[in-house]
Image 1 (tube, helix red, strand yellow):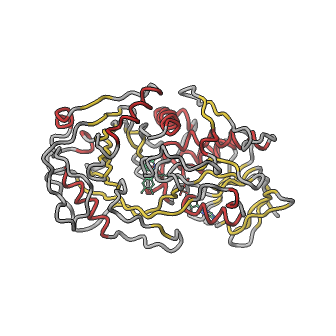
Image 2 (cartoon, helix red, strand yellow):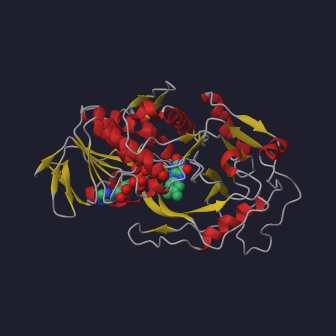
Image 3 (spheres, protein in one colour):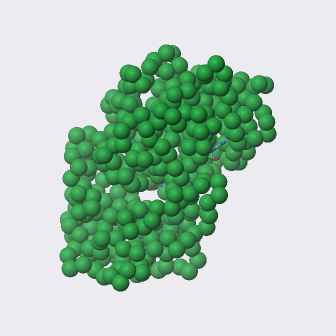
Length: 434
Ligand SMILES: Cc1cc2nc3c(=O)[nH]c(=O)nc-3n(C[C@H](O)[C@H](O)[C@H](O)COP(=O)(O)OP(=O)(O)OC[C@H]3O[C@@H](n4cnc5c(N)ncnc54)[C@H](O)[C@@H]3O)c2cc1C
């Protein structure tokens, strides 16, 4: 081996970069390796980058609330200049429609109360005041446009919504990842791009480094799998799937980029929305556009794919999502040219991530982010660095899970919640909502 590091991170998406940064800040000599040409060029760059606090599990909401404060204090977290400037957090809030499908958000509201996360209950009149363009009729259950009842408004209106003020979005997820790269480099971290890890080196029953596609070997006693939709491939290279109770696989996703309807400035008046009555979430986008993502309703077949060979063109799904949104927004114009992104989620069996060690000493996992962990990246970086550091000092995380105290909310979470060996968590929404 011709090079040696204290820790190698496979992947330079937002979570991989944050893990590298926090290990470097702890004094590890780190190397992030990515097969793409720059940080955040994979699924992170395609992310809607919505920051929100409502999750169906208590722990999911606790970590998301902590994450909110990192975005609020972004310059402080990054701590250095980036020649490209710092990413901007638009804290416009998030409105979630209360539906039968989401249990009228009663469970979420209980979590918000327990965690002292602010929210407001809005009746239909308050929704209409903020969104005069909204047709508040119930359209659910969500249908495909070829269903004869698609778009037929129900007799009743939606019951109301919950508005979460501590929410918003990052308009440039790739830039935010570049910011963290610069922070990592300032702490001594290094990055290697256009290099694919093809083998995990194991010596004396412990990880010892990686081999790249050009044959180069790089030594390190710590390797972290943060490979996004390629996480399962990398786990197989390391031979660590045997004791995992939760697997990960790649799911294709399409996001629609569409102009705001005439007379309404979505960029200024809009906010993040989640509407399970029509199966869509949205956020404002620069230039008075709307991004429309799917909440993967039951009538849509999930498209599990091979991350190396999947078709990254738009499909009929683009129009399905646009038409669903047009039920709610009268006057929405659907252009003939499809714009937006096609990318992949790395989905775990219960749509909750795995932040853990593995059965191979020195090999760690930050995977299965299930389309909803961009917001948590800064916290996950700090949490993974604490987990890795404690395990490297001999702590047995499987027997006695690491307890992690968060900086802003001062709450301690049991990192065992994210164990690879957990039972499937029945509290999960089993969707991108987490
Ligand atoms: C369409 C879409 C919308 C989303 N919207 C939101 C949202 O609104 N809010 C939210 O919180 N989350 C959202 N997410 C999820 C969020 O973006 C991800 O959870 C997050 O970006 C994951 O970051 P990561 O660093 O783990 O992985 P990734 O960004 O997937 O990065 C993994 C990196 O590993 C590299 N890699 C893989 N294998 C190898 C190898 N063998 N050798 C070298 N490099 C390798 C890849 O090239 C890639 O760059 C969304 C995701 C998508 C796809």
